[in-house]
Image (cartoon, rainbow, N blue to C red; front, side, top):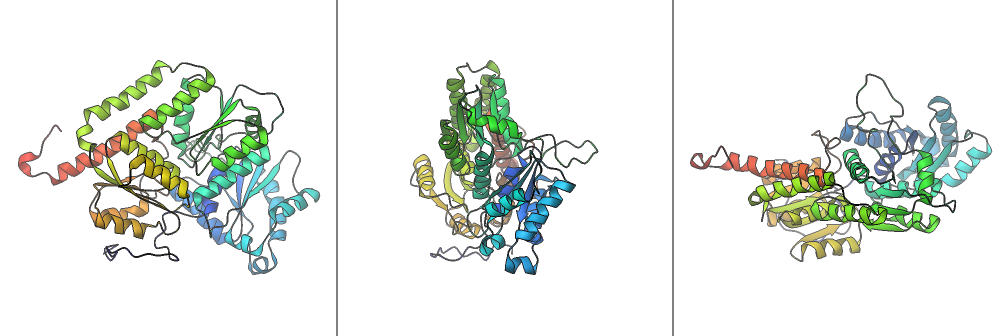
Length: 458
């Protein structure tokens, strides 16, 4: 029966989340840390917490995720985890030799009240941190926020610890992407490189969680942004934040700490948002858009024109992370689709809700935060059934119950491959996403068509 017991009648809930549309902060913090070269994420809590965080990322990327833990036992849970943390730092540098240990807290260490700043200073005083090495931390309790806010907190910690303004500007543009796939990070770099722009991007998980198999184990894959480049971002002539919920705190910090003026843009998903990103790069760098980028845009527009009849007017529901959702909403609007519902478990805030409403109109139901769960989304869809659902793997139960196709676009995706290798950002990513949508609708048409209307050429 799966989710067929979900009632159609919607009742007000204030203190209960059913089937949350998010995961916890440390997962996002760990993912951001993996985007820094030779950085080892460290979970300050129990082994079970760290096992879950690693498992979520390993299952999503189908790659081994390296991370350590303070391994709290009963004693540490009662008296605090300082001794565990100090011993961990000493062991990690002795055994695994990272350049950076990026510590994220857990519910347990937050409730105990462990003072990570004091503990790290104590480790420095005790000479447990080798010269040239860094231990940093971000506060990421799982009882609030989501994996997106955890990512945002760790990204802010990266800026706080490494970005330095020397007073001499360089000619690089710093790009800060929100929580997106490594394939999307590669696509953003591809656009900047095609335009001949010098850039610094972090975090960058490409070639880390989608690294090629070469038959050898790499504790630290070749990808990730180096400490030196992050330090130089404090002198960059301008910064671009791609996303708002997952990047804004770090962008604001880079501006206030290093006086790097930052343009806050939406993730470049679809034609409109990618146009804005490319045009912003063009203006800041003072370059012309190369023919290769125009060609990529032209191919996306061409396919959209060729097959517009299969997507125009279709009704869709969206679930996922707020920055990605806004990009998907823009993509759907570009394609002439009607967005019925937009739901995210991340507490994106009233401003985000208003922006989505302004983009899509009052006819779209928008909800974010703890009560914006998959149970609520299922109820909405029962009252106004869409033709298509965008969401993560957990949405497959709703899609099956509603008998509609699901486009897997959010985190986590446990049951399909490709998201790590094929982007949805940029013009090429937009083309990939559009084809996935077209395939879903055309497969459905083939499945449902009566024999007299079953066509070879559609």
